[in-house]
Image (cartoon, rainbow over all chains, first blue to last red; front, side, top):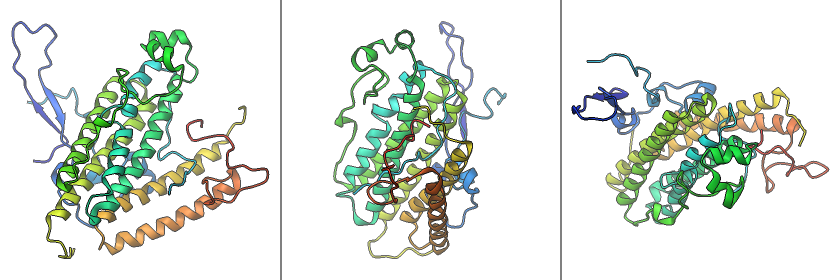
Length: 73
Length: 189
Length: 87
């Protein structure tokens, strides 16, 4: 299912030397779910397209994760 | 032939003189998944790829050269007025000894660019899958660079470049779909 | 190089960068969607707009392209600073 990021909880051992990161994440950008872009998708204005790095809001992939640090269980 | 246009694809700004960041960014200049490798990979594959997708490889190759110029601009600005002391403190003493402030096609660890970073198998599916993988790896590299950088202006440009990898990857995936279809069968929308 | 570019230079340049970016996006899209007539029309409209913006830009700030794609002035100004990585 489409979401910009996926989260997982790695095994945490009692002897791990660094402070454990309890939830890890990776990016799953929209192009992975689109396959073949349909015609007529909504567009950004030219200025906003340049600022986002794409003409189509549906192809925009944010980074870093805007929900980073937000608790998710 | 090629024409030069005296403008960057995206307005590159740099907040602070920061040679350490330049040392990391050089990964996307002369690294395995960097912009030089990308540009040369597609420029070279275009000769033998089926006619239907030559245009795509050609245009993406052109855009990668524009990205190479953006990365170079960031590196140049980040180190332009750095003193030898600052270069040394940033881990760029080795670079300075050989190159002064000159840019060079190597990765963040100083390993020079090599043609083995790119492939050209001649099989269109193999080549396009390599291209998709290259775009995803470049996207990941931009993520790790954004993670390490605290320069808001640099991050703005890096986010732009990362998004371009997403769009290129989609186009290469579409190219695979086009080649999977029956030749001669027209696509209607 | 003590020459400074006015704020207008950056504004005009960014306007060109924006429209040229739309052109790049449509160009890549059309390579895999050759029958999308609306996108082709938009591509041509943006190309026209880009050319107009560049004519205006070059009148104020000098030629953008080499090898005959822009007109040169006297004295020769195709190699004038600033270069893109300097501004």
